[in-house]
Length: 133
Image (cartoon, rainbow, N blue to C red; front, side):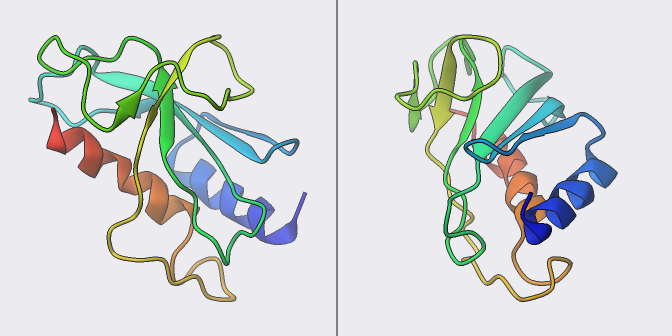
């Protein structure tokens, strides 16, 4: 495993204990990701996963996946594709993709503890869930 990615996966595990990393394809899975309370999603928590791009950390991750059938107010959310064209390497068989980027911009530094990193990217998922629709 790439040293930078290994360090960042360990950082993720310190905040999200159920993290799985698959080196082939550079996939990261976080189980039981909490959806902010008080929203009209059909789940209180969900698995989320994403793929680390080959050019990381120069290129940021894009989008995140959730198991199929996620709904907001009983409807499929916007900027969401199900089934996704790219298939994560984790069960279940059908995943949906939220089109998502880190709004604050991507500024990775040589130190994975400072600047943009995977933890910062994962923390923005709550922003997408808070948007609803």
